[in-house]
Length: 267
Ligand SMILES: Nc1ncnc2c1ncn2[C@@H]1O[C@H](COP(=O)(O)OP(=O)(O)O)[C@@H](O)[C@H]1O
Ligand SMILES: [Mg+2]
Image (cartoon, rainbow, N blue to C red; front, top):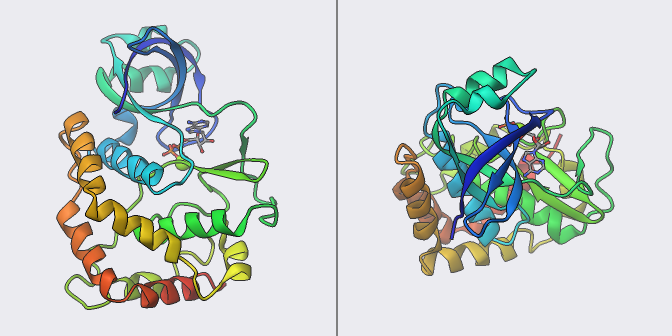
């Protein structure tokens, strides 16, 4: 169930992000107050379908066992921009985003931003594999060093920012192995987890993730995520039929998919 929170105040602009997220305070239906990273509708600029895609993919990530901050909907009142001082661009985005917006619960202060020189050695093989397999399946191509969209705490990793996904579904639509041209373009050679992935390759790479995907598909999990995203953001336009066709092709040869994923990690 996705919570809808009421915007109650501005804290500060997020330090990163092209959509210029705002860190805000919001009240949940049970009265508790939460700190939220708010990605405004206006911040997505000319991509109005993005909020729905982010919600869909974040819900899927959590169902597949990845750590991703809880997605929420935030009701932004008219004129909320007036509460934002010293950040005119953010004030403007907020003013143009009255209504329901996408946000995530702020991870605690003990979660750290990924810096370019961070070693991947302390993260368990299973965690690295899960994130790489997820990114491969979702065609998530936005985790390179300058913008890793990952946070870490001890041996844990949290994934963020699921807007740039499924951008290559039409690349080889109808082919028996439509993932091949995607991976052949080497989308993950500069993925921040590629060095760790290259060290870890086992014959079973990705199998656990694949089993979880089938479980969700058969149990209606993807439909539920899609329904939630479309209910919140009618412009969502997540093409589940196309994603499903891709997954169906995968069923016939998941081994080939993961072989190509592995090759795409090579520098
Ligand atoms: N829930 C969260 N908890 C902590 N930090 C977050 C959270 N969401 C976003 N951030 C921080 O804000 C940055 C920008 O958010 P992101 O979703 O990546 O937006 P953009 O699409 O603009 O890149 C992230 O890289 C991360 O540093
Ligand atoms: Mg980002």
